[in-house]
Image (cartoon, rainbow, N blue to C red):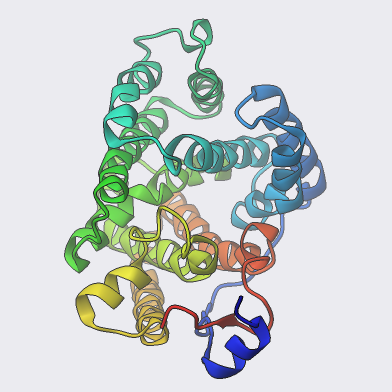
Length: 332
């Protein structure tokens, strides 16, 4: 058996590049209550089985993710968006990033789509994810208006369909091309589903016409890229020996750009910093619109950048996979 300390000395340590963030870091004052209530909701949902597995979710303290990314929300709305984030994590961990084949995931889509589109009474079926999805949809409908609900519905269906593509990559051991990955990561990452709830959580309506503005779409795309690329960097240590490693930008760059692992990480760091700069450059034009809905939405995107970095670098979901000061470069 290899000596881990000797291995670390013989191979360079990997480091996550600096993740610059010009946006303020804030925490919702209801963080502790939300963290407690969301964990209780998860336990009651049945999506995560076993005391040990539920304990890992408790240790990850997902309430801090919701509190950092929606610091402006009321307790009730912060709880709603945090529950949705935890649904996504649980669905990803248990239902998607498992041994399920792409065909099996695809066969489950009609049930979820039916629940989202009010075609099926999800609480009458045995699937715990469908029941929890129905509950969250009902709460979103109560908190927002029809346009906001439809936006969330559309983004969530987009996310669900993208899981089949990701599962096919795992099943066929495919490392997607760079261009394909960029397009699909904006969907597999589920960020558009959580961005769709920003104006609901803020209590400031972003109209469909405002949602379709080119600058709003552009800043949304930049923010989406930053969060999912940061996640690829931070989760690489957790995923590098798992079945989903091909669905990571580090792996894509290694395969198709001929990069070492560290070179790929550094390149991603530069890409995400350019996307942050793109957000900053768009803000004055968006501020000039004088729209409360647009202003709240832009602030919400900025909170997602700062909040997701702050959360991910401190959460046990990711941090336990990165021994200090960095990860031994065992796969370079």
